[in-house]
Image (cartoon, rainbow, N blue to C red; front, top):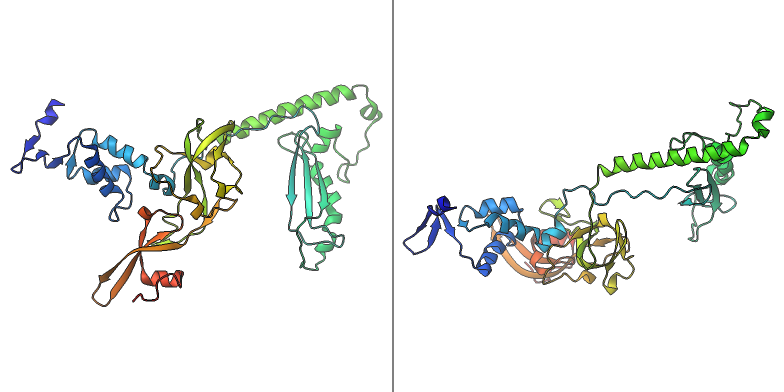
Length: 388
């Protein structure tokens, strides 16, 4: 430390220098102004901490400068909402408990949007026993109206083929069971023309049938546990643990429906997160309930940890998310809402008009300079009629 101070000197203007760099005193307001200018001005566009440090160290110096810059950038509200994460998805895989017996626990799925049949069916309801993997395929009708469907041959017969599809599925080998669902459910596969051997009397009426069934259940249970463990080990290699506490503030991940072409990149400044919002409850190992504003009442308030990012510092001015118009599926559409400033740039051949525009999902600090031609093309009617 002492060897470092030997590089300090006082210039003619009675300013302290460290080598050729201006020494900034321990004035937090002054340092914040320097950091703001180097990070949030229209000439810098929110650089990362390393790049920002390399730029500032050319002219300024103070103790723990690199650490303060890293902390400043990590707490920047704009960077936390806009910049992409270069981390593994958060939340370790949480497998469901293996059922103890057949048809105690089921999965359901819907295959919708199929051509309407002569009987009026347009969807399939799939019910799967989580233990034996046996399934039932049930033709159903959706509540929505589908008035136009092609009158093709398959549109008249697909529901009649469901029993064969169900049989083929249940009689096929399942890797997680190491057998077919019919074999797990009834102790043997159903016979097909390919396997039409007659079972002997001992096989059909043997006294050990109950014992064999119990052994089969234990065997299935062991195989399912092993399959879940294998799947979790593979999945967790590409994930990272992330835990929050009650009353923490987090950002919520959203997706733009339409990006805006700015700086040659679609959706460059589109926010990836909104908020921050307060955590009110932990609903499971990897799920949290958020305190959402009233205009987001249509959005379910429980989120997987992969959709959240911790807010390191709650900003003094929080963006009004009611202007973002977030849909229930966490998507939004951005558009220009206000012109903050105007300037001209002269070239050899012409003069180009620029407008400083605030976008519907951004604060005034995030306003961008856009060419008049771009705004007229993408958003006709937005610019005032008196513009040149």
